[in-house]
Amino acid sequence: MAQFKGKIAAHTITWGQEHLQALEEVSKLGYKAIEPWASFALQFEEKPEQFKGLLADYGLAMTALYGGASGGQNQSFGNLADRPHIIDYNVRLARIIAACGADILVLGPGGTRDKPTTREELQIAADTINELAKQTYAWGVKACVHPHLWTEVQDENELDAIMSLTDPEFVFFAPDSAHLLGAGMDPAAKIRQYQDRVAYVHLKDLTVQGASRANFPGLQEHEQIPFFCELGRGAVNFFAVIDSLNDIGYTGWVTLEVDQSTNTAYQSMEICRVFVEEQLKITVRG
Image 1 (spheres, one colour):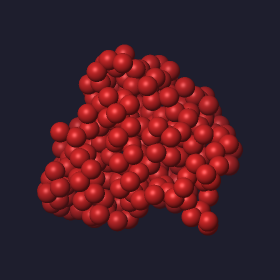
Image 2 (image 1 turned 180 degrees about the horizontal axis):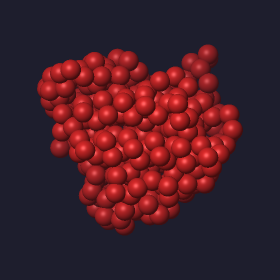
Image 3 (image 1 turned 90 degrees about the vertical axis):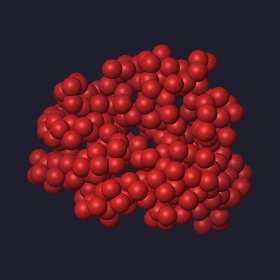
Image 4 (image 1 turned 180 degrees about the vertical axis):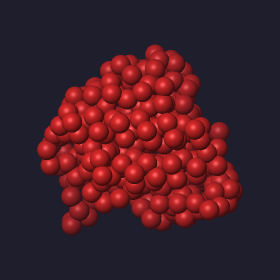
């Protein structure tokens, strides 16, 4: 495997709403950057420099914020009535992102999915994404389509439609290894397909089909087997993903993500860091 030229960050989703604990422990683990919760960043909407300073106190930079249609309950890109609120919300996030020295806005699609998205809805979604992306780009922030299981942009035909209907000058791609694989796609192949538009990456693992509770010794009796797991413990071929990023000359952020920990958040992100450093041979610390 060629030497990876990108940069590794951590997602703080694993800590839930314990934002300050997340900053402390991510820093202790040796990560140099994070993708924080948008709700945490919005607490500093009127004073983003203070948020940037808080991160700096822990030796951390911000990579991105997760926006898209996630700013309101039951919103979707494919619902024309939601367009004004979605655009306003994402421009607000873009201002914070820019003030913190980052340039990535992740466009999470709307949910919850109960049927495939129609062509008409995909066209409406693309029009909304085009408009908000032009506005965020004016702040120096790249809006990145992020396919996500259980949402309006889940399947390959939906992703490909959105990418074909949006303006490549303003709309970029943020692949997530687990969400792509879970929807039946090959993450490495999609990265190569949209190589000119890949601007941000989530590395996440997908629990192997048929896994038992024995695979998760920290799981409590009342907890279900997690859908996602720590890197290296699931079904994603991360060697192929990194090879594809090397092949396209990617030098941006790759953010490690674990939605649910069956240990502690600290242990889960330590497992991910060890896998990246020892198996993928990519430096995280230092």
